Amino acid sequence: MTSHQDQANGPESYVVGVDFGTLSGRAVVVRTSDGEELGTAVHAYPHAVIERELPGTGLRLPPDWALQHPEDWREVLRTAVPAALAAAGVDPQRVIGIATDFTACTVLPVRADGTPLAETAEWAARPHAWPKLWKHHAAQAQADRINDLAHARGEKWIGRYGGKISAEWQYAKALQVLEEDPAVYAACERWIEAADWIVWQLTGAESRNTCTAGYKGIFQDGGYPSEEYLAALHPEFADFARTRLEHPLAPLGSRVGSLTPEAAAWTGLPAGIAVAAGNVDAHVAAPAAQAVEDGQLLAIMGTSTCHVVNGPALADVPGICGVVDGGIVAGSWGFEAGQSAVGDIFAWWLRQGLPADYLAEAEATGEDAHQLLTRKAARQRIGAHGLVALDWMNGNRSTLVDHHLSGVIAGLTLATTPEDVYRALLEATAFGTRTIVEALEQGGVPVTEFIVTGGLKKNVLLMQIYADVLRRPVSLAVSEQGPAVGSAIHAAVAAGAHPDVRAAAAAMGRVERAAYLPSPARADAYDLLYAEYRALHEHFGTGPDKLLHRLRRLRNDALTHDSED
Image (cartoon, rainbow, N blue to C red; front, side, top):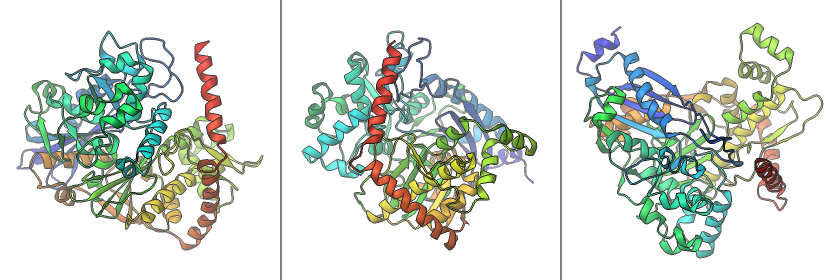
């Protein structure tokens, strides 16, 4: 076999992709000719997700807040990229480009030069000065007003987002800052997605990409919402888009600048190499899984799940996250939907603890808790646990777009076991995905293939459940680093190694087609459970009984008063 070092001494060129996730960032070094992954490294964010207390202040955060620290992101460039290069054993001088992707909508207020307000002495003690992670859901009230006003005024763009703008997106979060800390809002000179901010750190110049602007920034048909509409939300919000968002938009895969000497020193890469436009972790993964043709739905399954699919024509699909011309690849309409928690749900259940005999068994077999419960759950006949769950532990992103909702587990008895609940939660996420697929197809967006990338594709039981619930084969992206490799593919295009993203995907992407096949008998059994899921979905999600909303208000009131005591 040819060693990595031998390859480096040949005519090959390489690119670096960096994926900024919820808890860590990872870098991968990829060969441009065929997508071979030569080295990877991960850097866990020291501050992780800031949910309870603002760093260095002792200040408790209100319910539903989720912040991050910008320095954690810079450290990924300083540690993961050099480590990936070292692992690859390639000559850095043969690296021709770098591209990044980010969770979205993760957004932050900065000064005109890109300095985060959170890193200034004046604003560091103000929570609203900090980056708001995608899972910051404390702006639901603002999202509700944004949606109500858009429908009342007949705003054309609201249909492009399934009829509802999410509390996770840019406008709800910015309006929350304005209304709860107007001084921070006034100090914010640019309101920017972390996907674009990290590129600013690499190039030294601000840029904005079409993906985040379209899906998270309500950029449609060549413009943002009108100042008249924004003023109706709040008089001081009128110029929000014009003063804090507007900037020429760069197509995905385009070169937006060159690596600065400072960023070169951080990363160990040559100064002056191509830096690609920013991108979202979900959308950027499509070419890595060769999911760039119309109808190929890619599910990026990790802590949450994002669903992205290209379509040949514009369609307004109720409850989706958005549709953007060229939002995934040029020449197609990119549709996005998602579930706000998937892997997080399974992890939540394990955090509740396992009985002593389960822990002893796991130690004896050398399994972790996930493996133990997966093995036990796989023995069950479908429906034997007598449970059905709603996968709303972190609210509902699609198709209800309501983060006041919460999870439900129905059918619990004194005989219910930990693996019963675990399997019901696995199934609930599959039912949530089926709801999204059906909404897309009913809305006129064909789904011809279902492809999975992300960490959860390793769970054999979960993937078989998805195949059976969806009644369709499940294909798997080969790479374990889908978003990072997708970023590397975009870097290859920005550097000129491939003419466009589709061509680069054909050369550098990899997928195992139909890795899991549905069983008609199991699918029939799941149809019965899915009918019960839909009944719960309608009762708690769209029916007149707003029990989950009332419970959320009671919880938030109690937690808010507790933090004030």
